[in-house]
Length: 195
Image 1 (cartoon, helix red, strand yellow):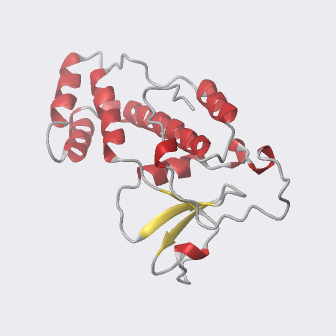
Image 2 (cartoon, rainbow, N blue to C red):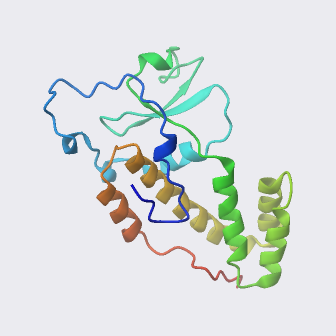
Image 3 (cartoon, rainbow, N blue to C red):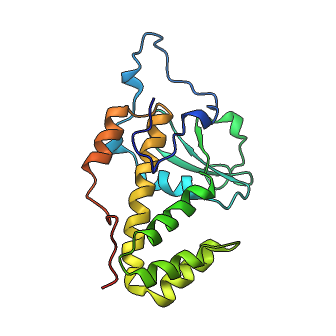
């Protein structure tokens, strides 16, 4: 499967192992019958899971039969009360994408600024350790008029990554993923203004 959008890393090679997925009784059930309807999936929640870098004793999981997303912790399981081992669940883990993926969004946003001075300040904030915090501080303190534009830019990319992840995991059809990307309203283009 070829990645059609250079902004989105291809995730098929880093697929997480499936956890005891039981898709039902009929061995003749067609592959297409097991695909989820993209419209029934909370793409925002998948995007949140892919961006979650906290890595504390918790995991995001998706039910391959329904598309429902669950949040699991080692202490409270998925219902918030009863601990359960991940191996006992018929769910697929949603592992976070590496932080460099989200870092690149900040780089691309800063590079796309039509206001060169603002773009350069944002780019400088990305140098060295603590780049995420410095970028956020620079944006919110010196360019509050760009916060909504940044959120739209970041969220559009996150949703596209979530849909591509679903396709790479074989949970939705590739045509549905391509249609989602095609049907999205255009986000901020390569030239972002500060006015």
